[in-house]
Image 1 (cartoon, rainbow over the protein chains, first blue to last red):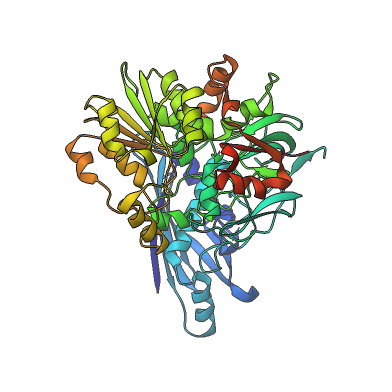
Image 2: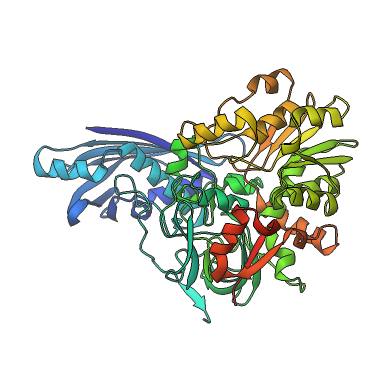
Length: 175
Length: 391
């Protein structure tokens, strides 16, 4: 079992932060281990996570509580590769500091091959992964996208200083 | 393209490397016309800043012409001439909104590394190890500039490269060093280090109203520049028994009202103290040699201010905390919030209040960068500042 709580402060109004997170399809944009999240019904969604060596782990989830601008909780459904639940809570930061985002995640890895894959998914430092995800979330919501450098980290457990592949954005050039 | 690469401790080479690409929508690619070697680049050369990787492109003082802009850059266009601040800042986070640009919360994609070493991360910076984000530097023909809609300052009024290049780092850094002293009428300011940042700190201290500025170094040619170009009184520390006693005597027992450390973690000195720090640093028992800083703290008048703009990387020994507490000293420091100072300092250049070209002693093509590093490191040929140009 894996239990992680992490938080970050972002300089945006609580409504904007909530709205961005409530569209679960935005999550893979900053959560490194997620390949995709598809909304499949009113409160239901299908999640695909990337595991090492091209493997994937999939599950369906249901939003169990949704309080506008305050809290979103979700839980995986029966028959998922991995049982998990989590919540994200939004609160006003003091003064002019924006919004606090508090994330809580719990994964119950199954036994056997799937369990081993799930363990690899999170590596040796799951809390650090969530911290890195929240850092990217802050980058996306404050600056518009994940910030890259020629020598960024790929993420915990994947080796320091690995060069990111260049992913060209739209460019205007006369060169 | 040609770029100056860190190839290991003590080794830089100009090599062919891939040209930079737009990686984020708010990036620009700049063709570098002029770039400079900074004293802090020597810390990288000497291997005292961790997380350098063989092949990293150096350089954080540069300017040039915009060649490409990403979709998110609205106020720069191809062909614009720009000076680029060495710290990278997003302009959107709480720190940027509070004018603390070198503390940008979003521009260091490797923030996890400094968080583990220092508790929190500061901003990204060009060509300054993976601790500051792993961004390729500007001692190259081309450089990628993130958040190009925030940092680069457009230069439009016919200034030469040499007049405005140092707005990228050393002029604002020296100025901030003096500004942090909160100089009052009648103040004496002491400045450790007469490299280019030290000279700009001296000049800035006078601009901000200092009565006297006393400069400390061991190279006579640098002390001469401090006297003749900046109007400082000087102390050659290799010729006095105690810098602290000398300064206290020069101020009739009061001590300088504020003290600026423009030296940093590779300070030199003499006697047992220098030997102690040098040995501990070699053995990696201490990452930084704070000799200038210790002197500054001891010399400073009661209730005065210590302004640290010299680079420190980690931990120091024998830090005189007791004197700071008992004598009500204030310590102010920081990587320069370059974005805050570029426009006001450009205005001072335009008015003729400061001539940044005074620090330049050597000009050479980019291809000669290794030679530039060598003479700057070894203080050969009275080297104060090396500017590299592309053809």
